[in-house]
Every structure is written in C-alpha cells, then in structure tokens.
Image (cartoon, rainbow, N blue to C red; front, top):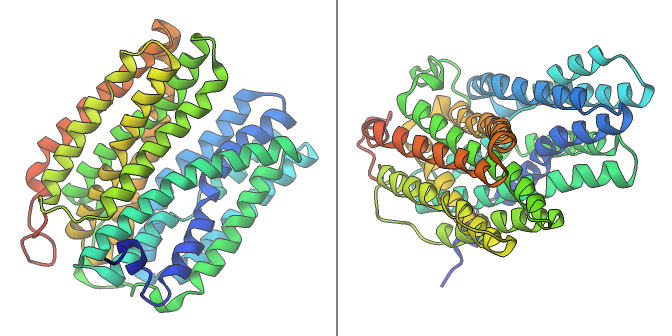
Length: 402
C-alpha cells in the first residue's frame, strides 16, 4: 500500500518548493513574538512592544490579500521578490533601531513596511493546486500543509523567543529576516512549479473577498482563530491559578499535538461526504470540544481537554482550503487562500484580547467561554452560508465534493 504523503512528492519540484515555503513562513510567528521579546528587553516597556507587534500583525492582515491579488495577476516571482526585499529591509531596520536605541516612532514605520511580507502558506497551496487540481492528491497536500502550519507556529514561536533570550535581544527578529530572505529566494527559484498568472482573464476581475464562499470561510476561520487565541491566554492563566504555571507550555504542546495527530490520519483518507457537509460536521465537533476546558479542575484534565480540542482543528483547515480551491477561480486562488489565512490571524488577536478581559473580570477558567461563543458563531456562519459553500464552482461545473 502506497503512502499518500510520499505520493504527493513524486511530482518534480514539489519537495523543493514545499521545503522553501516552510522555511520562509517560519518568519511570520517569529516576527510577532520576536518583536515583543526584543523590545521588552531593549526598551523595558511591554506596552510599546505589544503596540509595534500589533502594527506589524494588522498591517500584514490587511495588506497581504492585496499582495496576493497582485501575485495572481502578475505571477509569484515577479511580485514576491520586491515585496520580500522591502519586508526584509524593514525587519533589519527594526533590529538596527533597537540595537542603536533609536526613536520609538521609527519602530512603527519599520513595522508597517515589514507587514508587506507575502503569505507563503497561500503561495505554497497555490502551487499544490496547480499540480493536483481535481485529484485526491490535493486533499493530501492540503492536509500536509495544515500540519506544516502547526509546526510553523510551534517552532517559530519557540525559536524567536529562545534566540532573543539566549543570545541577544535582536536575535529573534534578525533570524526571522534571514529565514524570510533565504526561504523566499529558494522558493521563487523553483520556476517549474510556479502557477501561471491570470493578468486579464475574467476570473481575475474583482476582489476574491466578494465571492460569498470566501467571505463565509474567512469569517468561520476568524472564529476558529478566536478559539486559538483564547486557548493560549486561558491555558496560561488557568495553569497559574492552579499553582502550576510551568505546565502551560506542555498543555499547549498537547493542543498542537492533537491537531497534528488527527491531521495526519485525516490526510491519509479521502472522505466521500461532500466538502460543505464535512465543514458543518467539523464545526459541530469544534463547538463540542470547546466545552470540556470549562469542566476540568486540574492540569491533567486540562491537558486531555486541549488535546481533544486540537484534534478538531486540522479537519477544519483541510476542508476549508479544499472548498476555496473548488469555489474560487484560478485567477483569484492565492488571494482567496490569503483571506482565509487573514481570518485566522485576526481571530487570534481578538481571542487574545477578549479572553484577557474575561479572565480579568470573571477568573481564569472563564476565559474559555470566549471559545464557546466563537464556536457557536463558526457553526452559525457555516450553516447560514451552506448554500454558497455547496454551490456551483466558477469553472461552470457542479462541485462534485461540495
């Protein structure tokens, strides 16, 4: 019996662009946490550290879909190269300003330009789609990319904080700039697998966010992002309330492990159920798994609850990106995927803020109620938009798996 994960790398160049893309996208979580770690050490002020990191995150969330739209129209190499140069120079500017003790306002200027960083997760998925559109291998490829997303945030975050604490404060953002520069250079060199641009055809007219399915999936993933952000803050707060603050990292690692484990298994099979129906089922499971953290009273129970909650995440991502591939025209595919990734990022920020307020007002464990509300919203938006998710694909055919 063949291994589906090995099969997707039989195409020439697949391993090269996937590896380069992983290296480049490590930089995204490294920049956000690297900025906070660097400035909290060099400036001694968490307020400005958080504000600069938020400036980068919000700018990237708002700008990256527009960068991806240019990529769809003009090609990956032609657009990725200049915007990456600007982002890398801006990151080096952040590092230099921190090292030299420059003015605060300059941090915000550099953070704005660093936000031009392209969405590498979307670019890699666009290449997989160009290789395997309409085949079961695309499901496996998207499952593999969801696993890499998990690894990116797990290792990128730890690496950024570790480098800045163990070496010197600027080491985290500096490493992020190097990974971004090297990864994108290797990525754009893989011209054989680069999708063809769609400069003037009808499928590239208008923004991808105008497509109902894209809006629905972006809103649904925003809610899932809220669950992510809530989990991170609430786990830390609850473990501290239980008198075991050091256990928080292990519990959150279990959260990621649950997602990785289920994602690997889910990627090995091709469900017969239509994709839109799969997404409804996935949202029901996500909602159900937001409840156990409210019912446990020790770290062991919390670890089990978070492991189960993590297991609901990978099928959601895999199915959501599969729907985007089927319902978004080729001329808007990278932009459509980027809007989905943007929803996750904005949701994480909202979850972090919302759960923090809930914890301050009602206690550590009650922060998890934000996840329950987000789960309800995610399920509602998917049911509300089911007709669009199960609709006719833009290539003129009824979606066989929708």
